[in-house]
Length: 305
Image: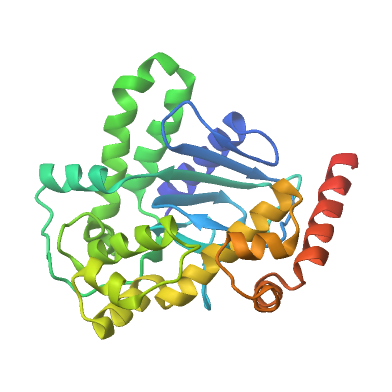
């Protein structure tokens, strides 16, 4: 890491610590910008990574996509270009040196706008690529990120300048080593663009039985081509992808509504409660009732600590 990047990294850490809230994920006044502060190593959390850029200024995090492991810390950034069910865990953090992270979500339209206004070469039919990557941070990205966060010092500037600085950040990422992965999500007709449509269909109808032929029609691909490109983008098959969404939604329902596990199994699309329990246990380590009990006990301990 160069001296310039090291200095900017320290400046970024100070800004995140200044404007964030301890042990929280703070949605800031800047649209789609989140600041994350964790003072302890966390347990694995299961969620959906939206299209976003994440930069760790201090500490380290591990993200699992299916069986793939993405590790990033200071000097790295992580990008997800489509919605992905992931498991994340802060693996380096302490009270004195908390985990500090910048997260900026973006949309395909924002990517397309930058591509339209720039001279970046576009390859519409490029082969599908994994929709998540870690890359080494570059000075222009850090500088643009710091400019964006500093707008929190002058909120009246946010409406005018935040879109400009966000556009610059996206432009810098598109210029980077893995920029083509990001651009493909926004280019109509690309393999990633078509897989994105399939992901949307699965997300919006996760409780329904999937007909692979229907998904292939949405993607305008053969069934075999859909399987190949879907797995290249998401690291899993459409059926596995749907299962991840079902089980995450089931866990959310069990935690938030105190609902019976059998009822939840049917609500998220399972026909067999026993199959639901087996697959839930494989993903989360315990059967539904025991897992929810463990999570609530940990929550109560954190509240009373």
